[in-house]
Amino acid sequence: EAGVAQSPRYKIIEKRQSVAFWCNPISGHATLYWYQQILGQGPKLLIQFQNNGVVDDSQLPKDRFSAERLKGVDSTLKIQPAKLEDSAVYLCASSLDRGKNTGELFFGEGSRLTVL
Amino acid sequence: QKEVEQDPGPLSVPEGAIVSLNCTYSNSAFQYFMWYRQYSRKGPELLMYTYSSGNKEDGRFTAQVDKSSKYISLFIRDSQPSDSATYLCAVSYNTDKLIFGTGTRLQVFP
Image (tube, rainbow over the protein chains, first blue to last red):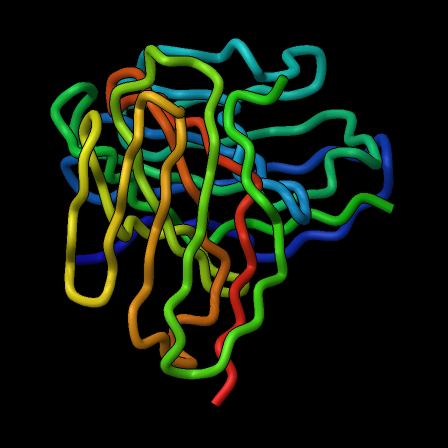
């Protein structure tokens, strides 16, 4: 079974530039998450989708971050304009369905962003 | 106060040692407790899952939850160099939205 795919793996940009990350979850997984993991910290939830609807985006900095999940499969996370403090690994995860799993989120390898 | 507190380490132990990793949490409403393992430059993967209080064992790994003291632990017996990773505890109200600790970096040397 293919895992969660993310791209690009690495991205270096200057502050105020824009960047986009792509995620393809495990086939059949209804729930998709974007987490931000700053060096030395645990992952922090940015946004959660159930199919193509947003369940929770309370911690997404909406003035600069946006995310979409068209057709309930792939998802894109965009940052515009980027700030230095956005340097982090952006992890995409998926799970079968809300409330029916055992806490098992399947994570991709992450997209590492460096903002200069 | 953070919802989940975890000592970042690093923790360095010899091969074969028993490792104890711990977290504390602040909200007694959390019902689900998990341990994820994260190798360098990889995404986290679920190691252990526990609902409410009690112990759960899986091979060399044992997870404990003490809801009265809001304390969760992961024990690794006969630790191996391949166990070297960052261990993240996570808590949840409903298995849906996970709140992670900062992670403890473990190194097991031969």
